[in-house]
Image (cartoon, rainbow, N blue to C red; front, top):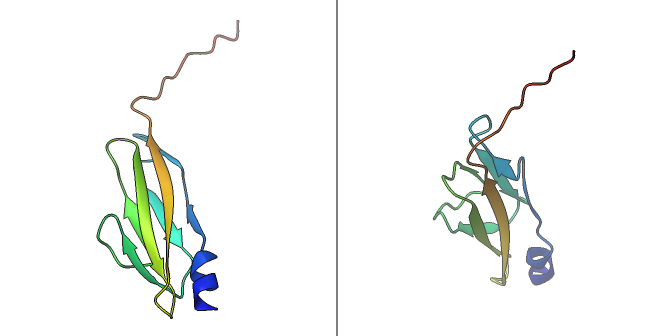
Length: 88
């Protein structure tokens, strides 16, 4: 049924952690539904560049109007620490 299909929709992101080297993430939901993101976007995928760790939510609506809510957390690392390696 459409309700079961909406409930079975999956969410994923290309990265779970953003840094100064990887400043953004794409979050995607399975295609074929209606979408309402916490960012107010209505597409099946969104590009995010958070300044702080953020939980993104999307309401996925099946053909019969039944909803399911999915979420994806994107963690922000403030700094990357690089330590020199001495091979002597």
